[in-house]
Length: 82
Image (cartoon, rainbow, N blue to C red; front, side):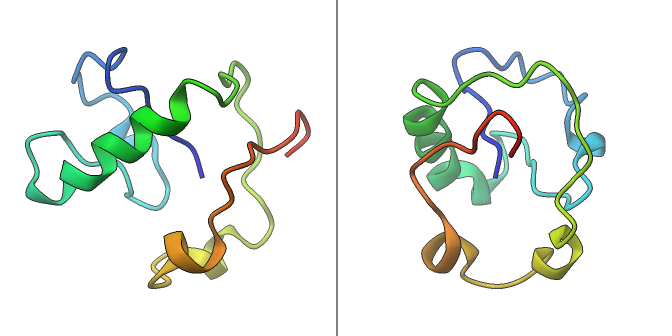
């Protein structure tokens, strides 16, 4: 999972079509309310990503799976090679 720091986002929308899981939604979307707080909480302690990498081999398996946040989320950031 990646998070976007809400204080650094300029709401330009460039990242939305780049997300292969269509998981990025604008702040104006009703579904965004809980995600804004989630992103703010983890954007500060997690490292910034500066190099695009290949998605995990099981990414498609998790695309659209319900309850991922409750069932699979870890507060620990992935490693450099994650």
